[in-house]
Length: 69
Image (spheres, rainbow, N blue to C red):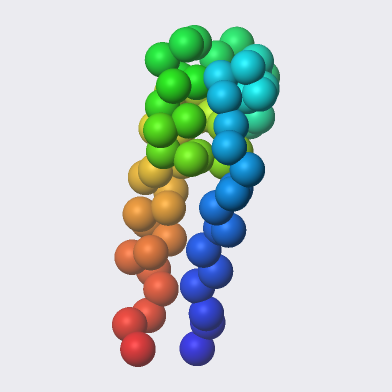
C-alpha cells in the first residue's frame, strides 16, 4: 500500500511581488493573471497556464493507475 503525500501548504503569506517572474517549469514569463491564480490557489510550484494545463492531466492519469485498496 502506497501512502499519498499531499504538499504542505506554504503558511507564509505571499504577494504578487514575492512570486517568481517566470514559470518554475519552462521559464516563460508569468502574466498577472497567472500570478493572481497562483496566489488564490496557493499553487506551488508557480506554473504558467500551459505547464499547469499539462500537469493536470498527468496527475489525473497517475491517480487512475493507482490500485484501489
